[in-house]
Length: 102
Image 1: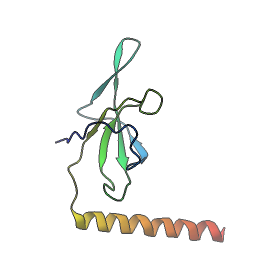
Image 2: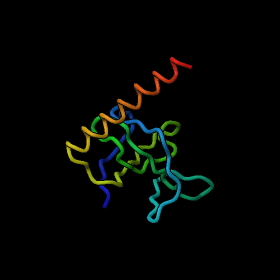
Image 3: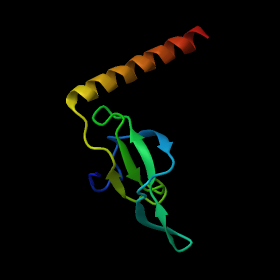
């Protein structure tokens, strides 16, 4: 089930680090390339509010300011947010320690 939240253009409340390839149910935005609609990319949010939650986004969101955005995953519970954010923060600390010691 997906949840459409409307436009994500201009939003600084989310960011993505990893793009997943392949999808059983591809989505297409209204942008076109060589006469064909573009397949939306599947991304993962790593914000405090939606950690680990996947969404569709247009590949042209920066260059063409396309606002296509649609959630793939359902919202997660507050407890899941706490756990994921804690693990994410611990990972950042470990990576800093590792980089400082090398």
